[in-house]
Picture (cartoon, rainbow, N blue to C red):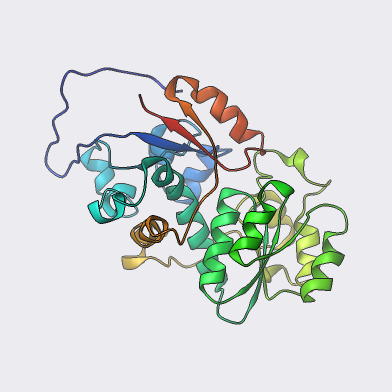
Length: 298
């Protein structure tokens, strides 16, 4: 549920931030209550309390209560997209695309331990998380193979990834390219649309690609399949952020700077006025957004 309210004047109190939200990235969370349990957040804090949406704010912060600012993983305590040096080279729509994609991709790539000289397979390289993960893997010196459809295939190749289609024959195609990759990251949105993949999900094929070792595979989407197969999904991983934080919002400054320099990007599919948030959410939950969807606050 999204409610639109008007106030005459907003006053920022102690340890609160007052600024203007211009754009917000949209991503369906699937089950926001399950997400809140995994990361020990109250449901009102998941997606900034937007009931199944993740709002990644670009170009500034919003007014936040003191209770949220005290959270160790608080997005806005660490968010640096409003840094003037970064903002000069990064428009607000680009900024709004970064938050969820960068945080999630970096966290999982870090948990996987992707390192120089390894081969990484990113399943779903055309998703916003997958697109970010491909770039982060390449920055770490890994050889990256991405499964993706035609909509993002050329962009992924231009980044330096080896691209192969998903679907039937994927196991054989990846093996022909790289044998058994060292690590596999699954970003396909099966937690929202299980019907998009093969019966039983794609994880059995990814485990086969990894030489039968489920611990070399990690998913950020198919949690039920992961539990059945022993695939990693992040719930048993050690916090990797500063001061023991789980979510990696500390990396936003770095990647916002890279984006401002043209060295990191997330594909933008469409922008919508705030009044069309339901249309944007429906497209996101379809699993076929083909890039980031951004709400524009008019």
